[in-house]
Length: 122
Image (cartoon, rainbow, N blue to C red; front, side, top):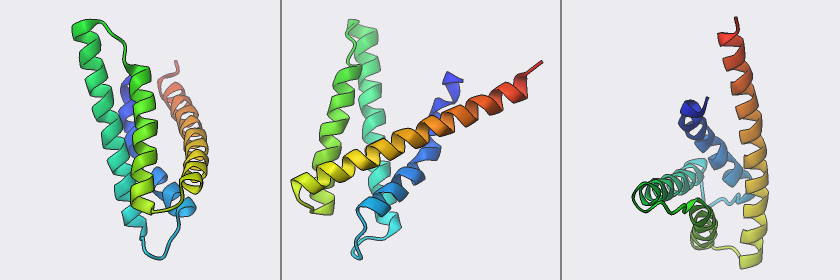
């Protein structure tokens, strides 16, 4: 199941874009703008994880938590610059997007797990 996690991440990109569309709605931005922003954040996450994995292989230093907090800081700064909202509103809206996105990822993972169990049950 761990091998299929990139599929789940890829499927969740439009969902994240829709959450940004809901919480950061503005007539100046279309859904596709939010989708590109979420794709941008996803690419940054994957880049951080690749760098973390390479450093772990070469130097045996685990940087996953650094990547986690780096994504949070970068996401906040990117949202501030892209959406041009106040610092507090950006933070609160990102927290809400994060909570809903995490909840939806958990639901998708559970459904995916049940589908795999049903497919491979003896």
